[in-house]
Every structure is written in structure tokens, then in C-alpha cells.
Image (cartoon, rainbow, N blue to C red):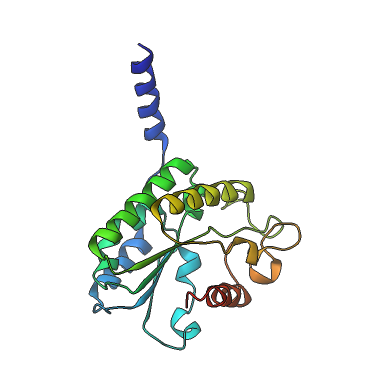
Length: 217
């Protein structure tokens, strides 16, 4: 009886998780990506709005780099568009996702499980690709609009710790950019953001500079 009760409880919990990702922007941008020619051996930045709004070609001197960010995306959305990524057989793939999962109150275990499946699929379908899992970025509590974003830095830190543990097991590099974006109070430095969540120009420069300092770009 206990086991049956646990199964019912687990199923109920699973039903409460909002795994949706389809919307006009997601569907139209993914359709656009699929119509573009494959770029073999590119460096790909993959994620949500924080990736989406980055001028990656400009940051990297207009080298072979692809922006595959979609604003509002989450780990379920990334799982659904692995095929579009692997057709490029990227040299490097920088993943940044999880902010929107936390905002939808998706449990950390679900997020990490999605990451595992994404990475396994990439390794299987594009074995020559070097995958880098980037830490979810901090927020600035004084600037962020709580009417549209309800997660906290404490939740983000917990997710990043779980992602670090996962990458250690999977032997995938974990790129911890979080500390490089914080101020003395542990929040995202105000100069790196315009709304407490998304990056300013200086924020993107700090991100790119960190990747270069780590000899990843």
C-alpha cells in the first residue's frame, strides 16, 4: 500500500510540473533555424533569452559562431530541438538554460534529468562536439521585476551545485560564470544587467571575457 501511495504521489507531482515550451516565438525561431544551411564545425551558443540577445558573431570577430538562443526557452524546449543543433556537428557547444525552469517552479531534479538527456543525445549524435555546461546566472533583487520573475539566487545556487555534480559524473566541463557576474552582496552586479535578469552590454563583455580567460574561446 505504501508503494502504491508513493506512485500516486509521484504521478501527481509529475502532473504539476509545467513542461510547456511552445509559443509563437519558440516555433517561429526554430522554424527559421531549420531553414538555414548547416554550418559544420561552428561554435554554438544555445539557450534562452540571455543567449538569444547576445551578438555572438560580433563578440567573436565574426568567426564561425551560431546563436541558438530562444527567449523564454527551458530545458524541455532544448530537448525538443537537439536535432537542429547536431546537424551542424559543432566544434563547441555552450549551454545556458534553467532560469525559466526555476521560474516555472520545475524541481531541480527534473532540470538536471533534462540536462543529462540533452548531453547524452549530443554525445551520441555529434560525438566530436565539446559540450560546456554554463552555470545559471545570478539575478539582482533590487532591479528585477517580481511580477514576471519569482525565483531567487538561493534557488539558482542550488541548481548550479546540482549541475556541477552532474557534470563531474558525466565528465563534462562546468563553466562557473556566476561569481564573475556578482557584486559584493552576491547579487548580479547592477552594471551587468538592465532589469535584474538580462545582461547589459557590459554583462555580455564580462561573459565573453570569462570564457576567454578560461581558454574556451
